[in-house]
Length: 189
Image 1 (cartoon, one colour):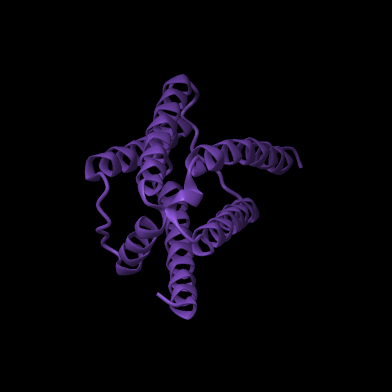
Image 2 (cartoon, helix red, strand yellow):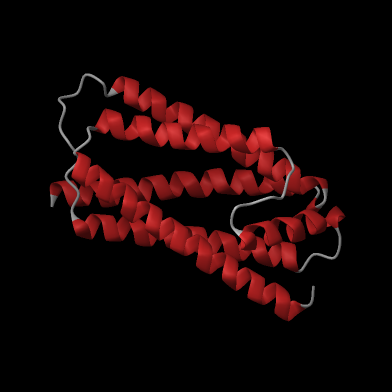
C-alpha cells in the first residue's frame, strides 16, 4: 500500500469511527431519556455491552473479519505491520473491556438501593462529554496511526502493547478527573 492509499484508509477509518461513536452516544442517551432508567440500570447495561465486546473479541481470536469493510481492511494492514504485537494489543483491549464491564456490574450492584431516580441529562453536559470523548479518541488514534504507518518492520513494536496500555491508564485517570470536575460543575452550578 502506498502513502496515499494509507492516508485515505485512515481518513475513512476515522470518519466511520466518529460517526459510529457519535451515533451510539446519541442513541444511547436518547434511549436513556425515553426509557427513564435508573443509575443502577444504566451501569448494568454499560457493563453488559463492555463485557460482551470483550468476550466476543476473545472468542473471535486473531481474525480480521469485520461487518464494516474499512475496519477489516485496517485490521489486515495493521496485522501485517505489527506482527504478533497486533494480537497482543487486541487481546489486551478485550480483557480491559471485560474488566471495565465487571467494574460497571459492581457499580450497578452498589447503586441498587439508591432511590430509583432516572437520569436527568442537560444537553450542554452531553455535548461536552461527547466532544471530550471524540477529541481523546481522535488524538489517540492519530498518534497510534503515526506509530504504525511509519514503522519499517514488526520488530519496532516489541513491548508496544505494554507501553501503550501504561500511557492509556495514565491518560484515563487524568480524563476521569477532568470528566469528574466537569460533572461536578454541572451539578453544582
